[in-house]
Figure 1 (cartoon, rainbow, N blue to C red):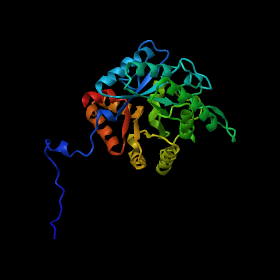
Figure 2: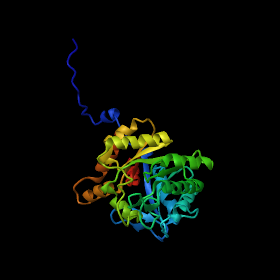
Figure 3: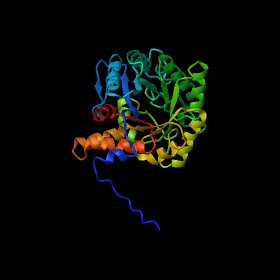
Figure 4: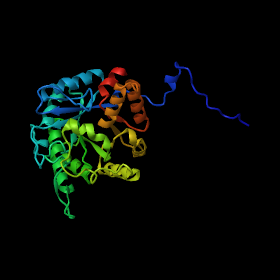
Length: 324
């Protein structure tokens, strides 16, 4: 008979790192950056202490600082000078994101540049695509008309030099439509990181201030995920996987680690977005001395990676590169 097995906890601080199951590294991190077409200097984001909107002529230097610290990927969001119902600024070849992509890639060719493909920052109504009347007579997002808009935005980003486009509007058929449009124009090597499971979350508030993307009517529950639905969330990501997504994403990250773990079983890279509300809560509690910022950030990011994330999009990326 074998003796009863007992788990022995490793108490030695010298040995513990050797047996660590999950290790966070700089290569896991993606830094979100806001580029503001109207800004002449950095504009501090009040609800996200330490974050700013940057003028386009500064964005290469900001990305360069991240690159030198060891963060090798950025996710760009644009705040345009002009908004309309058709989001025409979103696909303008001289638009704010298109300019930013060219500047970053010219200065740091090896920096991986990811672009957010959506319309909420560019529409006068703040919704993520083309809005019109539905069969029920309600005013809401029109799926197929919005797909054509996303194709134009993604193509304009690819033409500017983006390495990865990240459609975030949760439209039906979004990945297949964009993949077809990119391939038709010869951009087969541009990857698609789909916001495949984007929940209709209360944690996006600070982002909407940062990106000036609040909506003027209704809400986004008709095209974002119900936080209560885990099985549906998995199926949404599975559909994007089958349509040809190269990377899947779960957003927000922290409250949805169960969903993240499930989606990781699909077998392709998975990104998790630690969103603005998660960032703001940690910052606010740390400023009051209720928690230790560094320890809390590293713990939350390690847990996100442990759950299955290959990439973590986080506003703490610059700080974490310093800590690691």
